[in-house]
Amino acid sequence: RKEKKKNWMAAKPAASLQAAEICAGHRDSVLGLAVNHTGSLVLTGSHDCSAGIVDRSQPSKPRFFRRNLHLDYINDVSLSKDATRAVTVSLDKTVKVLTMPRGLKLQSLEHESTPLSCALSSNAVVVVVGCADGTVVAWRVRSVTKSLQRRLWQLPLHQGPVFAVTLSHSACWGASASVDGTVCLWLTGSGQELKRLRGHTAAVNYCALSPATERCLVTASADTTLRVWDTLEGQTQLTLRGHKGHVWGCAVAPDGKWVLSSSLDCTVRIWSIASGETLLFSSKEKKNGEGRAPRSAEQKRQGMDGNLVFFFVCGGGGVTIFFSF
Image (cartoon, rainbow, N blue to C red; front, side, top):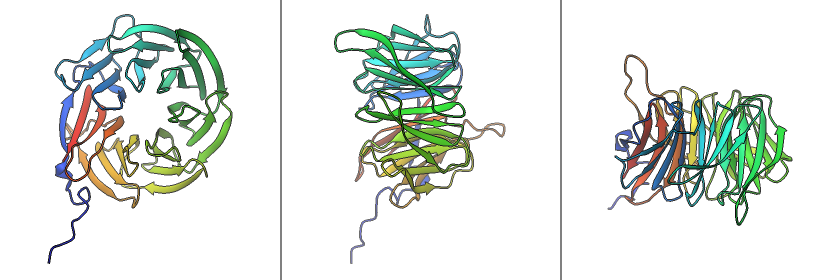
């Protein structure tokens, strides 16, 4: 009698994750990571004050933008859906809007407080920035015909630094995650608070919406857990436990069934949203007792029945792409 075919992901051991370094070349830690919707272009931001862009068809030829970009660390980057616009935020208190792939500066947005995180709407019209003083700022940076610069709103939505911001697929609302342990949902046009998500017992380092539905939001926290939220009800649907250190980044698979996470414990894990179980995990080798902790994660394609799956994780001086078959 033939055995029932098992779920291909659940059957794979941790060793089935194969890692390859791409976009190596930054001179310092990479904290910002963005990938276009096809996974063909990777944008990075580094503490060496530069941004990098790599075409995965030519991974050995990354381009780096340094001149006239930023005077201090780049904390985060964001990329429009068609990869024609990018945003970088820096400790020099500026936000830069760039054309891609040439990296030409279109606009420079000045901030009173240090910007830590950013999100660019898919049509590259709105930029949302999370700041060190707990404020969130929204800018309109583009109209149908030309570039423009207008601050829509600036509100103190948190009691501590805002480590992550994200926009819904329609860009009608967004979410911000903070060291105060909460996630705030707000309207993009006005900044009006819609809901406050509470449950984490430490800083919330990252938040990511499911590409499959705007009702599913995943958060990564310094309390070593991830939480899956129903954004309509404002309630936790699932808590993912297993990491032994701060969880820095997370991403949701296009079908909304898996979550990728990266942690200070130097591991990358893939979780089932249905069961909460760890399906796969992989870790970097430690050198001199210390590991290279991945800081951010993106997942842009997923397959079933043997198709290629790949995940992008940044840390150290470059970006690692994890392959699974």
